[in-house]
Image (cartoon, rainbow, N blue to C red; front, top):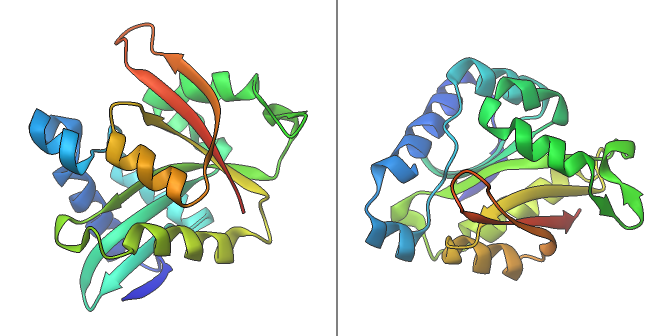
Length: 184
């Protein structure tokens, strides 16, 4: 298994395909409960631009994409409208005694997904290890949010060292979210 960063548009396309297979809208309730899910669909042009600035971490098995972890700099918030409220909320939170809006050394972990055939093989952990290696010189930590009902994802994030920063219910959907942080 090769852990690396995105280097070309074909890899971005593979990410979009794996993302589409694991969106809430593509899965049954049972699959979501046991295998996890992703909630945000990224537009191809936005994802391509994100990867030009901060390439995603990917796991490759030959020419197959085994998993990805998207790195989303804060300047991309307006490009993913569904995430704008999250970015506004993050601006008001503090980590290690400092407001996030006043700290330039963090990014949003935009999404992580492991292909079904590769689950349970350490890909999730490997993606985060590679992310730390690649982005530690530029950033001190990463922030993301996970739906509490996505128990597989919550357990995996806790296993690699994420800590809960904030918990809140989405006022529109009632979904309870955990904002979590990982020191790089």
